[in-house]
Image (tube, rainbow, N blue to C red; front, side, top):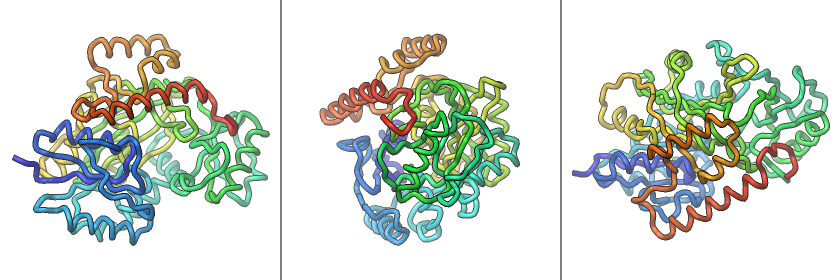
Length: 411
């Protein structure tokens, strides 16, 4: 018996591979293989048996091209099955939200409307929503291309500098560009802002108080809200390490699942109150100064590291399928089981994680065979995939050695 649906994933990065693996683990026995449509093919999904990058379109972020590409794919691949569309990047979720009415005749998907997207995706308005719902966040201000040379910070250095418009920032280039910057003093601050605004990026920048503490103070929460507007899944992750390469700063590299019921209840109330639909991903840090979570941002999709949820036994794909394909009634699951998820070698975890208790917890989970690496999936381990994994892991060793702890403008 074959499954009555085909997963169509937007993107080709590690997030896409994690979703494809989730679909394959749950429905591979029913012949499910995911298809991916992206701007370009990336190594994470290359030479894979569980996901095929069938369309690469460099101009995919053009709304007209986006709709035309997806409609053409649907007309060629429907074959009596439902096409389950899953955006796996900020740019793709925005494209889908803007063009959802044109695509609903061809695809099944779960997403919000454009006004809510604008409230949540622009960081200034997102922090206003946070305040309305009782979430704390770091002291924050903004600057523009017009006033950045005269900006006065309402807090002391160090200062985090990051784009308000992540899609526009992704498309700009300048020397020593990083996903997020940390300025320790006024001189570094000026140098970083001059570099950013010397590029094509001319939107607002978020200037934020630095919350002290290593990577292990970070937490990440993934949620799924059904088409009925009710939260179906809440899963909290305790970061062990983030990535430290210029393009990866702020992305999680190793996570252990954890639980905070008070935070989960607050998040459930928040998501249901604003009428959210689909996957949501929250980045936050536990502030050692007051023991409270400070919310950084909300991604309107499952996070890049979201396979940590599937790894612990809460398969992300099944929540989509049960809700959108099978129309099954579901309550709210708060994930409690633990696993150690990673995209980096174990030796990197044990070399750079500083907390002895966390290291021991990681060792215990490995001993209990509860260690899951996103790319180490036996049904997909062809010779080419094994070579890719080896090179990928060696590259991480080099990156941590070169970049660990460096969030300034220069390498």
